[in-house]
Amino acid sequence: MSMLTHGFERPFSWAERPAWISNARQAQLKRVVLRVLAVLSMGSVLAGLIALKTAIFVWHLPA
Image 1 (cartoon, rainbow, N blue to C red):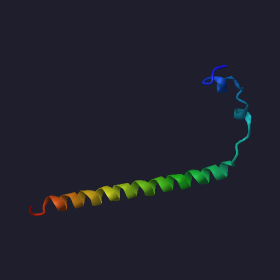
Image 2 (cartoon, helix red, strand yellow):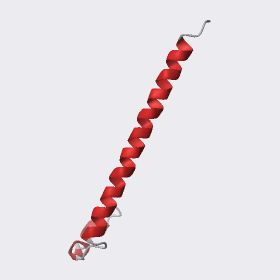
Image 3 (cartoon, rainbow, N blue to C red):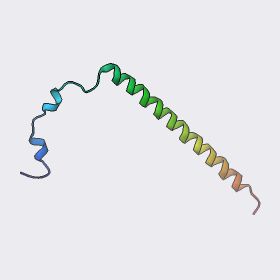
Image 4 (tube, helix red, strand yellow):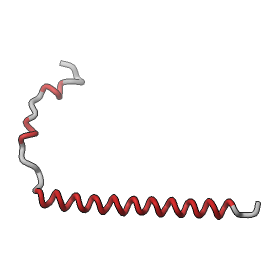
């Protein structure tokens, strides 16, 4: 048996198992993750604006 394909020969019994977390908890986690992604993206936009403003400021310094 090949080391690359030995995992594909097992049956997909894990697909029939019930979900680990409830639907309500899953919806709550989805909302939290979306909020975290929004905060991170706002932070990256803010960091980009600060970098742009700094670059413009440095560009206009007398040499």
